[in-house]
Image 1 (cartoon, one colour):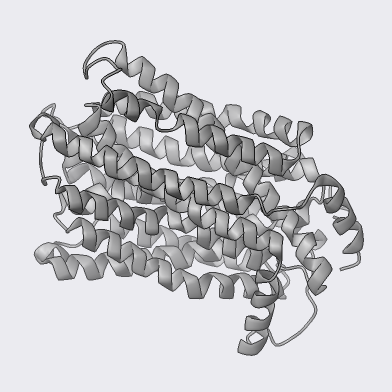
Image 2: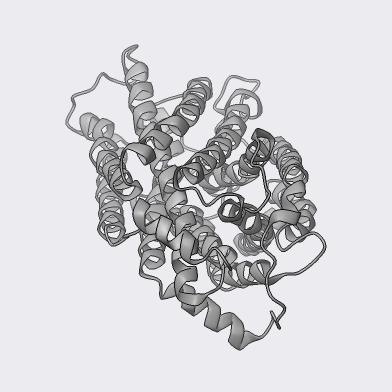
Length: 472
């Protein structure tokens, strides 16, 4: 951008803005389903339905918030007012969701209504922060590889935020005093929610203040009636017509649903299928943090060496082939029994390598979405970062929407008993869990791969797009 020096401080605070989303996303993906269904007693189908209702609300609010962010005019620019305004409501809503009042627990209906209200509130308020904050990338730099580096920092902080909160959960909040499995006890979740909300507050405020100095160098939109329904619909549809955007949007829905489905069942597999305890899961999260850091230079190197599209598709193939290896190994009786000292290191090695490639893919994918900004502007003569990243955010929320709904459906079908101890669960039910989960996950990943192949922005095309829209 004109006159803007992209120093390490700006890069750091831009990346840090993803940490609160990572904290929220980790909680939704890994703990929310088991907390409301296994601990509080809400039916898995009602739990997943509540989160799906919130997704439908997102379908309306996300593009609207993105559009308003693209066209807002103020002394603090078009992004930062929304970032500052959203911080307190997000944190209060998130803390309350993990601390439901006593009267809410009286019935299935009241728990369902409360979870819907909290999930909708968190999603809307978080969109007001996440969309403007993420959209800054296309204004901070137009460089093809530098965007990959920035997106890498963002994903690193996002993963570290989520993994760090998970580590605190496993090592502090879910450690029961009597030595039992604290993941299945309610007390730890209350403190977990408050601690997560406090860390989210610090991350969002720091990112907003740390990028505040870039405001004078960012794009100023032309004056117009930004709340005209016809204008909103027209600009959103114009973006949706871009073939490269549409390929990424559809791919992210399929991939996000698959990832959310996998993440929602991960704690069930860890606890019931592999027999891991919270102290072991804490070690898993520490290794995941290492993978998040290592993935940043790997993704940057892939971006420089290969076209982003080719690198992302290569990552996809690896994930599809390597991801289910351990589950299939157990089904075919090729692995040591639970409790064998060799099993846990094998699980750690598999989890690390798989996650390393998954995060690298996410980084490349986010950088590819940033490059759509100029590609769309060539057609529309407008910069629509907010709309584009709102759509990306909506698709990404499938991780905690449709993914959780499918996970709840699978758990209902196999009828996993509530409050069951891992040793008491029928092994046939765990086999059924794998046989339902693995094929569904594969179908979603293959669908995403097919759609992603339609993306066509190369390094050369991106350079041409940047030159074409330089005057916007």
